[in-house]
Length: 293
Image (cartoon, rainbow, N blue to C red; front, side, top):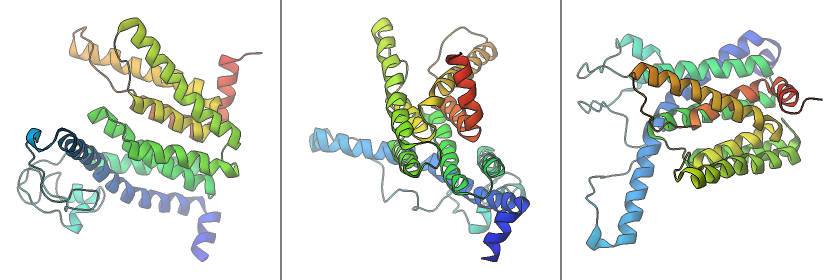
């Protein structure tokens, strides 16, 4: 009880506590970001084998269970099993000099960066919302978006295992009006899905190409469920702007005009995070920009 009282009355301790917990969560998110797409691929292979039958069996080198818990994390180069002390967020990376303890192969900078970004974004949420149930809900929201951002950026996949829980959590929390009235939450989910669904089919009708995936529809529906239909204009506008700037910069750096497939989910995640952390300001901005008096 004393700890709860301290966190409720001292914002510094709250930020420190959230930061430490979020560093640990960031370490776990690294596992999710790597393993969840592999788990999905294995599941698809198994479904193909079951559908096609044994005579069309795919070459399958996948052996043993593979999920978020087992097998133990190991170096992809030498197979060195990662010890507990090598898993301390950020610190272990610095102590090891950014290299595997077994073979000294460089470890991707992604791992400590994900841990740091997760902690910083979580502390920003705690700073804006203080010691509240809303902070607890938005921490889950933030951690899920970090995982979705990275998975989509690396694989162009937005797993249902993440988008659906995010969607239902938004609706359930808003049953008590944590962020918006329940009716606005449900409308946000519906309009979020249908808006990108409509754009997708219109683009496909005009060009014969698929401009985005169904995971993008589900992610925007989830964002609408958390922040209501009122944030959707901002989220669509901001994510499109983020994506356009990145795409143009990428083509300039590559020095060619060739268009490459680019995931939309990371930009939706960025815009959605901004819309929820500064929800009231974003709603006012959206109303002024898209529905001026």
